[in-house]
Length: 276
Image 1: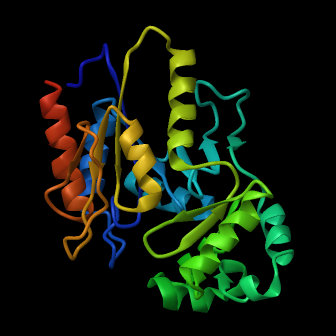
Image 2: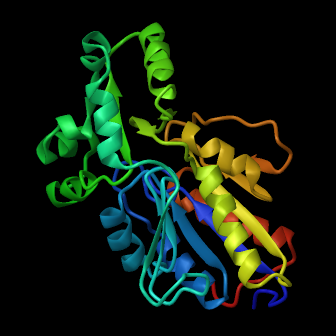
């Protein structure tokens, strides 16, 4: 049984972290997450995926209470969640709308715009070919609300020029595992911190311990801002790096490494799950 005087919140990336990089399977983490839920530990997806993708995935795992999508751009709380304003589901926008992002892309110099191949430029079939997603899941991936994943075919110097051009419009480029992501003034770290504040406001007397796991450059700030951070290595053994003492590298990639790392942290905190 997890210590009832402490609230454990686990913030996790999905692709390459909670999900296998190639098969997109969450096993064996899915079973473990259900045991964590029974023990009162919250597992919160913070992902570059869309709402449609994440609702289906986390619902199938059994942890669909709260999540953030599109690299921290939107936070979704279900009907009746303790700190929502009403009994209706809540969607808190941290960034800017997809329409605004597309408007800025349209205003870029043609040479720079030609180097960008975003999801809006791709069919669901194209996205399926690039990512390995099924066609049905690729359609869900196109249902963007506040970010645009894109492939970049230009030079590093041109990418720097793109960053300067979109920065003037309040947008940011984030580097993910497969794609770059164009977002507003939001990221996974800010989303995690915003959600943590809401929990503190609702239950101010209950200490919160945060754990964050991820594998990509766009996860690093979130990982380093948590009380306990975990870098999940890639299947080839490569990994992002951190010098923070609160961050360690998981022993294995994907969901298997996820389970081992979370158990290690909980054990180090002197906490024991009800089920294994």
